[in-house]
Amino acid sequence: MDYDVFIAGGGIAGSTAARFAAKAGLKTLFIERHKTPRNKPCSGIQFGYFEKMLGVEVPRERLCNYELKKIKIYLPNGKSFGSAFKMLNFMRKPFDDWLNIIAQEEGAEFQDECVCQKVEEKEDHNIVTLVRPNEKKTFEIKAKYVLDATGLRPRIRSQIRPHSTSSGFEGATLNYYIDGDSDLDPETLYQFWNLDWNNAMFAWIYTKTLDDGKDYWVVGTGYNNDDVNKRQTMFYESMKEQFNINGEIVKREGYKTSMDMYAKDRVWLGQNKILMVGDAAGLIDLVRGVGMDAAAMSGRIAARAIAYAEKKNTSALSKYTKLMRRITSQTIKNQQRGINVFKSNEELQRYMDKSMMKTGMKMMYQSQLNKFRSGERQVLLPP
Ligand SMILES: Cc1cc2nc3c(=O)[nH]c(=O)nc-3n(C[C@H](O)[C@H](O)[C@H](O)COP(=O)(O)OP(=O)(O)OC[C@H]3O[C@@H](n4cnc5c(N)ncnc54)[C@H](O)[C@@H]3O)c2cc1C
Image 1 (cartoon, protein in one colour):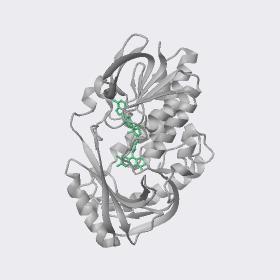
Image 2 (cartoon, protein in one colour):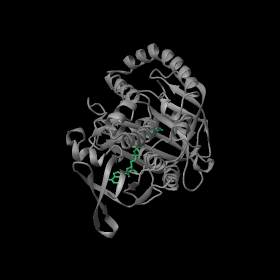
Image 3 (cartoon, rainbow, N blue to C red):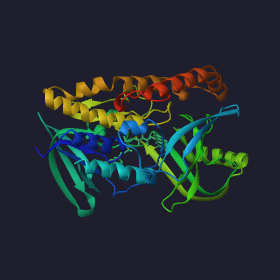
Image 4 (cartoon, rainbow, N blue to C red):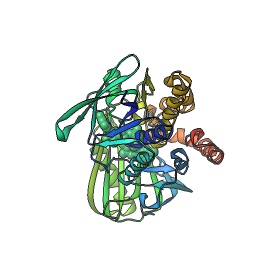
């Protein structure tokens, strides 16, 4: 056997899984299709508990210049409310690069510019075909366990479960990075709930630090089954007027998913010795508006499940499924109450009026309790 664990994808789930697998003494290889450090379209905002999930503090130089200290929510009727709330704010390029590095420091092997092409299941191991496009080289490795951490266009999942992804795309997001001024506060995360701008969650504005060390306003949204450019233009024009955003758009960043966010079996943890982690497992949560926490948790828990299975000669998938139960049931439950069910902004407003107070109370309660819980037992927020 070449490796105990092979992981396709060097994002949050893949790097976290690689680090914990190597830490547990498993011979581990993880790969990334792009040259690293690589960019990944993402708001890069997480709750404070993320560091607990990763089991390590994020170095200041991997974070954006501005810390996010407040959140302000705009409702469909235009009213808003805000509260103090500290969040981690980072760009995925330096952040994921750091995760890659600390996984290697723990002993995991890493290859970038290496693409996982396919996996063939044998009785007690897997044969993985890898390609190095630049060198026009194809080769195979043998690994007992395989983790698919390839994100929202999951490579291995689409091969072994083709019906759960499409060849086209199921939804898209678009961000504008703006070099300019506005009336907005750079330490606040702004969320705009309005079905005309985003029919899956909220549209957003925040600040981000690009590679040149400068800060930019990011205005973005996402839309399913429609032209996201049209929605983004509507949102951007409205925001420009409301908050005096003026400046040049220096970067446009789009992202597409091949996974149907509303498919009943979106959350799927794998088969035999092939485990799905992060977005590839369908763990992104549009109701919570985040996915990196579930990605890190699933990577960490999958590594633990494999280490346990090896020690006890039992099924890693069963252990993984058991340890992930709270996260998977929360994600499935949230998927069923996504805002896509609302036909109008009035309906969405009525729902938010009814549910927001309760969600806020639960959020405060669980975030206090999380302070006493271990990294693997964190309850995902908002609960
Ligand atoms: C616009 C946008 C904003 C978001 N904002 C937030 C946010 O603020 N907070 C939050 O928590 N979540 C956010 N998310 C969700 C978050 O980005 C994902 O949940 C998270 O990145 C999932 O991590 P992952 O490791 O599963 O996948 P990814 O981070 O997507 O990593 C997958 C990696 O696999 C690589 N890969 C793909 N195919 C192959 C292959 N065949 N071989 C080798 N490598 C491969 C990819 O290049 C990529 O590097 C956002 C998502 C989007 C689209």
